[in-house]
Image: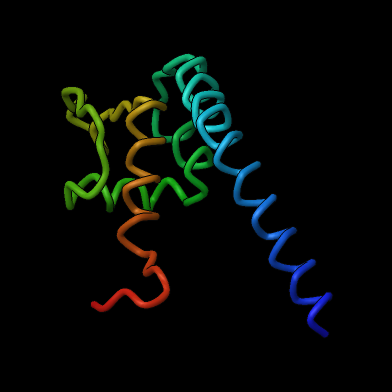
Length: 108
């Protein structure tokens, strides 16, 4: 039992040291990958599947100013034309994820 505990502690210490050395490299790669994606301008029919919702839901989010978008003048018929930046949508999704995630031991 003592040998098993010592081996476990030894392996955990190695894992921590490896993680400390690799973490900065991994973070830098993730930053580079997210920055290398071009910013694409999308309309409602392109942005809705990009986000994973229906166009109707996307219009509702825009009407309530809950999602970043660029409203263009209405043609007088139907809904106004809306444009979305993929970079803004990606950032919005990350913010939504943070708002709806509670770390263990974190209080409300």
